[in-house]
Length: 422
Image (cartoon, rainbow, N blue to C red):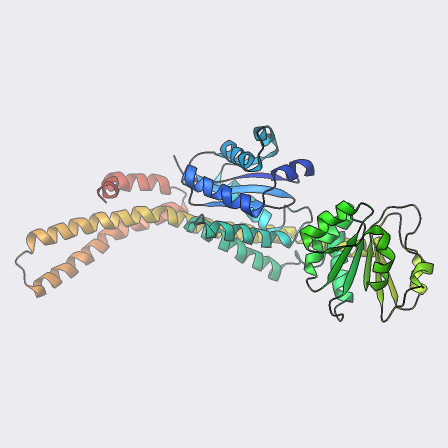
């Protein structure tokens, strides 16, 4: 049976967040599952990608191992009923489908925020994990490097990665631009609902910032802060934290403004104070801008930036898909060449074996000079004999008839014997 590159994918397109959370894998679990795939199924190529939006396994094997892999995930997660979640996985059992899916994922075409740059870094880390465990053979190495080169082309040749295309990314981009001249800007995030949590997770793009988080439910703030390495502020100490902060991001739900002009006017503002209101209804009074040094952005200002960037990205998709198509075609040309290489090598070995045997039989008593001349002649003859089948094999690759040609040449020259003798 032919070895195929396959994939199984559970993502935001196939499963709700409650299911994705259950299946998500940390670094230790990925390491453990990769080792089991190597041990149980003798795999040489396997890649596991797990993010908040997807958990995917890519592998090369002659069998569809989807159920077995899902069971391994269940074993790692302590889930006895994991097979019940198989319906949430999309299965790709054909080379072309699995390869195309990996390209689309790595480029950000399948991301919740189209063009998400995070995913390319996550794919790189997944590849590194596989390579570290010797789970990336020539096929996967070549595929991943083709993907990285394609990503570089997309950045250079399209507007697909330009600007922040989500509210949280646009917020981070805004903060970064307005605090660029501030050493270790102090940021306070108030409220960690869905938007607030997303903003908190994207604060990693502000590595020099000192981030504090506060929330009415302390445990929720603590959970996120521990994960991200931020400081937690009890909600009752919020006013003091606001006084100290250079940037206040408010994502709190209430009917009347939480941050008022009266409150802000009490603060001693040394140079500036950036207020970002992500709440609907708004949680910051618009009149706060009357206070000297205060800059206010609301959700509409930021969303318009994000929408503009998203429109640019969406309009770039045809160009991105065209570049991906070119890269896949190039990869397939290499793959076809790789398919015939073992046959070419076995044919060379077979002919070389015959040549050596005949030289040994007839040149026992020859001089060194005679041996050198005949050795050179027979090598040249062997190269000429090899030329036609090698050319035919490579031509068959381009016609997608390589398998048939491999079979013919293998039978004609009894190449299976070469492998067995070796």
